[in-house]
Length: 179
Image (cartoon, rainbow, N blue to C red):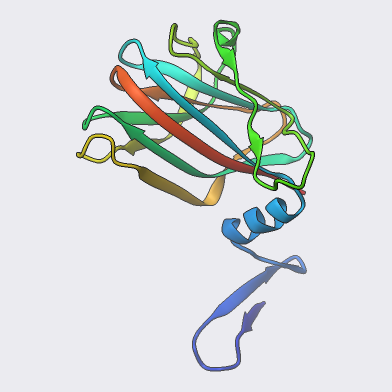
């Protein structure tokens, strides 16, 4: 079924199995209101090429949705791979990072394992590349990467990122939990 706005603008919304289909942005806003939206922020310097520097594992029974990633690097040719799956045997070498709740009035804490490392690679293996984030050709310029349908991590699923080059990277990962 399709619902139209009735004004002739062509705007419409889909309904599937008696559920209104919404965008990730609308879901992220709803999750933020409920105190279930988070951000992981890290500035680090990677030590080598193809360096696993960020790891996020969903321990919650709900799906974790990564809907946006912001990044900048001091190298104008930096590229980041975003991978899902893989093993987490190397995360013990990393530093735990607790994502912040984007609703300041909420006391909720994300049920995730989140690690970063700028001293030794997290050594993630067995992953599947979801996308590659090509940073701007201007060093130190913020880039925003939106994922309108989200990168979905079910319970016990993992996401990690690797840098193609060594250098300084600032990273912001936005995510929420879907009820």
